[in-house]
Image (cartoon, rainbow, N blue to C red; front, side, top):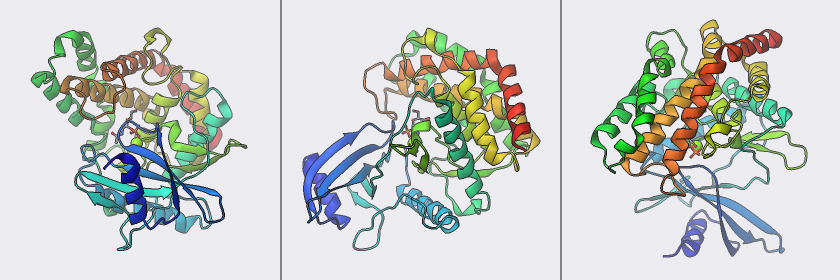
Length: 364
Ligand code: GN1
Ligand code: MG
């Protein structure tokens, strides 16, 4: 069945009976496939929904994942009744998903909004920082044991390095010799990149419920006012560290260029964006952040950047099985961009640490 008819069939299973107009592919995320599915209400007004095809190579337990999302969204909704939330549609037998063969479908409301990739408007960045900080705080009293790990060891950097080493060893796509320089660099920073993982194992950093995929385009903003409306992409909400969310957000938002930019000499941390995000994030989290978390917040940006570089490069070596690619060397370009960013972060680490301390002091 072609996609046009498949999306119609899925929508009908989610009990959307309006007149079907067709679909648009949404460029969102590097893992799942997302479609905006358009209908016409009986009175002639257009109405859209988002349908996603979950990548079950990445998410091996999609039913457990939907269960996590249900619990987390319920918890937040109970705290903030009436506030805009993601709503997952149900089938006739009350399921939030439709399985057909290897495909795992879900449907949510479509929120008219805007998103940002590279941002220079500091107020938007500050707002995004506050939105992610607030998200963690909303879940501060959530019982961690209720959540499954949707991707086990997602930000376990030691484990990521093991996977990376395995990919280098197996060299499935025969590409290892052309990327020796990248492999050597990542190996040389392994211990530093594993700082958070090691501190967690030593009991020096607290586990929290975290988002774990805090790209700034996972905050939906109001199209007219630019106010943050909602945090989306809850697939990786699970136990994690505060630095995972802070670090991943900076990795994405504070880079001068997008995460797959080929102009490696343009890559780097914009410290104004860094400060604005830290201000927003700490305005919500300063009351609960521990001294060790604060001390490692700037370093967490390097950690998340290096970790993702190992993931992109491992996928390149495996033959591009995990991340969606748009060019044959996409994962290599992503790797090189993240390595350039990681190097710049090491240079600016002292400055970033000072900024974090200043923002925390101002927020208290
Ligand atoms: C993936 O699919 P998306 O864009 O939300 C990945 C993140 C990476 C990101 C890099 C489940 O996120 O961990 O940081 O790509 N998500 C998963 O762009 O692996
Ligand atoms: Mg995601």
